[in-house]
Length: 318
Image (cartoon, rainbow, N blue to C red; front, side, top):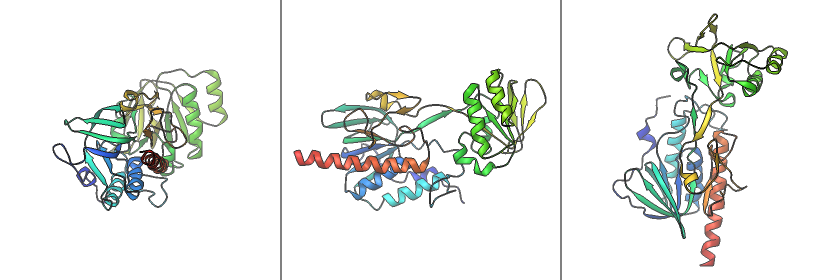
């Protein structure tokens, strides 16, 4: 597949102050969740503004998996298709920009962009996602998204039955290694210098998972293919891929600034994606622990349904 450029995705940029100062719905985030919500709202003829910074969580990934009818698609191609379909709805506008601040006001929300533009809306959906913090291991960034991964649901099938390393510490690392048994029986847990407790070692032994507790110096391999892990002591470990447990945080501070409680980048939401702040909704990776693209799309559609219903009720009272 020909590589899709960022400019192809962010195709409806507005210059200056823009042409949409006052809209019904502001969506911050133009990934799967945001585009899905915009599609439903566009079909409901709601004046909707989508603001996207062009920095998706899966930017390093070659393929998006587990999405029925789009399994294996390039993530940028998925965004291009979504944006192209939105262009058929005149009430939806997409712009390239970074929202640096947002305020609740009577009757809606104001957002400020890094370039000085300001927009207002009656309702707001945050689909800003999360950020994965990579382990500080030499070479890991080089292979990330190619032969180093964090999600077995997304990339486990492609590495099935291969010799895999699992990078993690403590009981969480043990649990993650045991989870990966569904994809490969040739597993080695690397704790990067942290000693594992006796209970954890016994659990690994019962399931045939090897353990390396030495400090990891670097990852090595030709091109983007991981071949070995080099430790501070002992022999290098030959592996075809590595999975790690990432620390995670919010991609944007907006939810907290607007009064939502955020833990490890995730905000609590109600059954229809509503937050604790009236008129503010959340969808995608920043709203749930199941961080799959198809779940994000469903949450975006669900939030759009709730937003449209809320606008109908509000208009009927005016």
